[in-house]
Image (cartoon, rainbow, N blue to C red; front, side, top):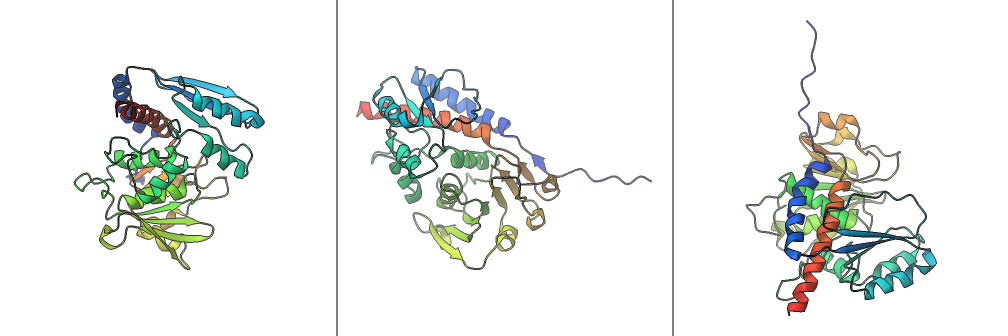
Length: 308
């Protein structure tokens, strides 16, 4: 008799399928606005740029400028009432000058959520800009896209109160960059998860304490810990290590874990399907929809402010 391998039990979920589920929400929000928001993107780094499809109903203007003139262009767009949102394609100077440029963008047009006020709110677990809770704070696009993916996969427990819906989950994130990894760890911990944040310096644990009694997350260094210590404890593993050299050690995965890759390179080998229950190989298309969702939210916040 010929031996047959059992069918793989892993479900591969593509970002495009998840993005479609968010398009309805974005389309409904756009219909309520009764306008076509204009998003301006500044390209000043002379690198290849992939033009993403923008959902019908939005306007997108890509403006290629010299990096030495970018500051003036941002300030002009801040004052331009026809511009609803601004994005800048980084890196530009690969120095603190890039951080300065991030803070130049008007908080009311910052669709990437990189302004100090938005970053402060995110880490402090402050979800609104006003006491009346009419204007929602903006979150960075890729971390928020991963949150939306986890919601789509039903990792968030909707029986629990909003803000506590990851309670009981242990999550490992292999990446602690200031752009994605660290903000993502804070967001998931603020929603109740125990998050192991891993980079070349070691492992940190982000939690809201025992019984998630704290209002925001704390961070504790896990001295001596490595991937081998935290991955077997985690029912969700998220990896975003840049470059071809890193391959996630699949043998460490807990049987039935959910695995998400947000690197442009594939951190997980094909063998991930032998242990994971769900595998999401990329997040880019969800990130684009979240960007447009942020743009809608900024326009709605501005309208709410004008009503006041």
